[in-house]
Length: 257
Image (cartoon, rainbow, N blue to C red; front, side):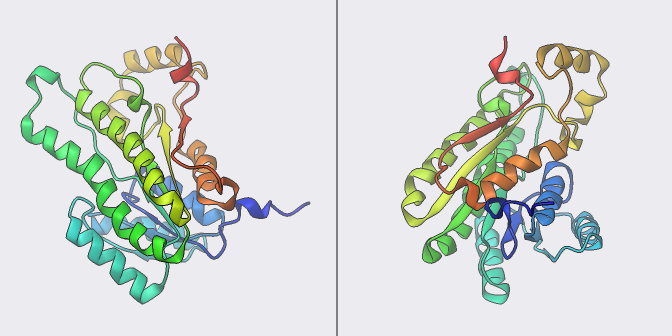
């Protein structure tokens, strides 16, 4: 059997995935580990973070735990600087940390709005800037921001989330515009509707699931492992001239009426 293409080989690379205790972040950590990367898991819940790290180590991965609050600019900078000083380069960053809060826009709580903006947008700036400062000095690096189909579409009750994911997509374009000249590739992945803890209320709703299956050309919910290929591509040498792009992995929902 021929060996896998070196274009997609992440051996020798170290990847930081924020919000990697659960859901998409945990799945992407496993996927990049299988492609050869050393993994840095991040989250605020130390117990869940340790569980995720132990699961990866059981598969033979080299894993570091880096608990810090991605919404705290100083904490993000200190954590990234400390890791680089002690362990070496962070070659790949996946900004995955995020949250959802549903409710009618006319009744949406102002504190909840501020929280979702800080968690979904400010965190991308905080960690992205901290990691990019080191990548720029080295002249190379990969940054992947997790956006959403909601950067292109809207549904009732999630207007603030839609706004934040639109901002993530445009911040990705800004990162590419500012940092491509330093050898960085900055791109985004926009998942469609996936069976994740964040979507549990929707997954458990038979009416919504029936609507989604009819609305999505693929006719089903996405599964987390189906995001891994996109993440490995954007993390690897295969995407050396891809910059500022948002890759939709959505079963076709954004291209079909």
